[in-house]
Length: 280
Image (tube, rainbow, N blue to C red; front, top):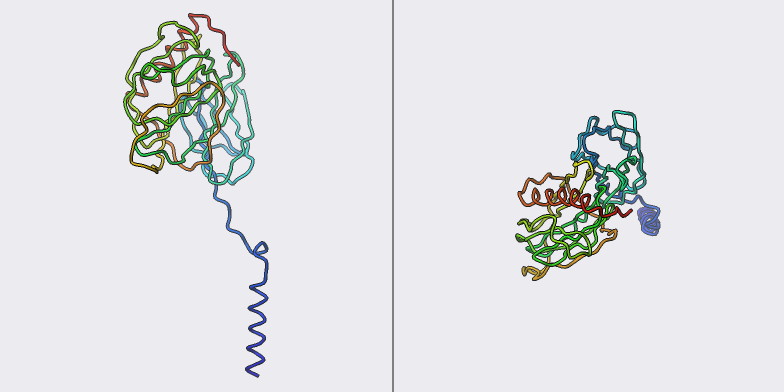
């Protein structure tokens, strides 16, 4: 009798072990996180995700956490006080962090648009920072010089450029793209602290004198050698794509970023004075 029970129990165990792993419950995929950035100056908007209001009366330059979202497609909607409404579908990957920016298109009189940017929170070498600048405003192309060399070349509205640089203080100047013209700003000193993702979104309309900058800064892990990189890599105009990331928002109050915001403001007005055509 005991032997029969043992054989039956052994057979049951073998059946369970032989069950394919695909039929067992898999752990849920980690959620993604989304931040809504209001980049339309002199206006307030209601921001929603999948039909649910995240926050109403969002002023310019506000960064609003939209919470954790399941992987997949989601709809972000922005509605202004005058009834203007824009929407965009965003694709959220597991564990990913996104900034979704509401901003004007290249045409200053156009309807605002929603553009998503992946927050690259991957590790940086010790002593370094990931610097990302996105033009989400009606501004002509320009070169950004660092310590006398072009770091970002031919940056146009709607483009994002990202480089990893040593944490340090740099001499920054802004000049019209591909010209020998003198700087429209600077040089100015820009402190770049290590171990960060520094995101800068240019917003506003240069012709109306409303150029400004929204800054989103996040900690990133540090890996690799304790040696700092010895040089600053360059970049050129064009969209860039980042890997998935995880993290939270912060509004940076460093004096160096105030200088960068001023650079974007003066860049916009200078390009208007010089009649440099906008690039789509």
